[in-house]
Length: 368
Ligand code: MRU
Image (cartoon, rainbow, N blue to C red):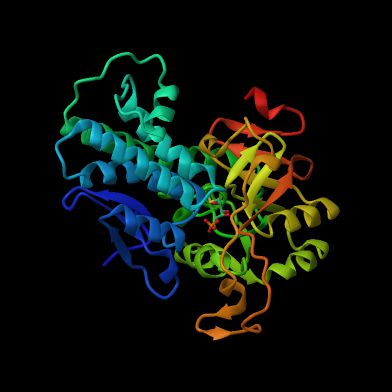
């Protein structure tokens, strides 16, 4: 029997595999899924069994450990080539949320540090360029490589919880007793290893004794708000009301909302990528003079890039044409289904991080 306090994603030391809460089953069931192969992990990421930027960061890190434990041969260089090619496959599954590649790269870098390969294939050549100062092949055994990868991946998971609690404490200071918050998608404990980012701020404020109410936008088409945010807040006894995405205008105009708080999938120089619909809420918040806060750890920052550089993931047409097994639109209607949108800096009041609260309009994000 698993409970709400179960970590969203973690390593199973007995079976040497990844375990995650299957988020597609919530709110009907709280069920765990094990991923014993890279293919099953790719499927879990693609189908959003594991989702949310920080949870994807942990999945990315753990994927390299999984690849290392899955390698059945005895040739170190062949093993490294396998890790690199699995890393590439994992990073390509969801291109918008930067945490996935961040987690993969962090663990891969740990394993590859000071290592140059003899292999001249295009993938290894690229990695050799990243480590151009390394001149010798290091002597670690296959077991050492597994241990390095797993230690670093577990560090990502532990840090995630600590960082989210610090973010929560920083953000909770901005919330007043009696505030009503509007949030979009799910930036809660299920989007992270635990605690949450946007919902972590709400949790920390409630823990401080503040009375906070939440409007959760349902977040069409996959309903992360309706299914997951409402469920996890209700489990914690936090007052939550579900609204259709299109109701955010009426609640903001009628002064039923004090602050909008959302998570982020990638923060670039000039704005923030988050779940489709976030931009719409930001425009409505600006129009109605309601503060609009983005909450994210530093692992979500990608300040070398601008909004134009980022690929927005487009998802399958049936996510819009169907509801469960039934068609709710003509079977062959054309569909445009972007998973994320871009909110420009001008619409954001502050970004709440583990290092403090940033005003993106005053402080050039490139200098942090
Ligand atoms: O497609 P999803 O469900 O992975 O999208 C998730 C979001 O957009 C979240 O708001 C974001 O990852 C922040 S989670 C702390």
